[in-house]
Image (cartoon, rainbow, N blue to C red; front, side, top):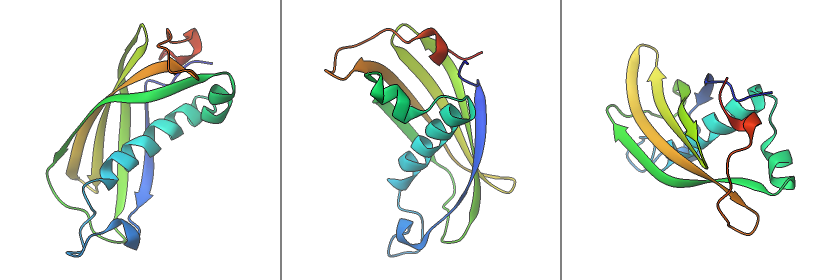
Length: 130
């Protein structure tokens, strides 16, 4: 059981995710990225809940998001999540969010593995991509 190197999910924009102009509020894209990471783990047969029960947590150390085109309520989006690298206590991801053939948003995150006490921990072997 190892982390899949890439994964994709479909997201339908909910009304409450939009701002007064009817566009997806910029902060929601980071939530979409988190959804992508959690589903990547789940598809790899790794439960984030079970990981937390073992005292391991993945915390965001750095996040970047580049907005190209806006999304609106009820748009059907596809988020592609790719693990670029996993080494030591860190995992680097890249994200691409599409509406059909339009690339809307790209982003990157760096996650750090920590204990339930907040102490940095080396990634377990099963969290490394195959």
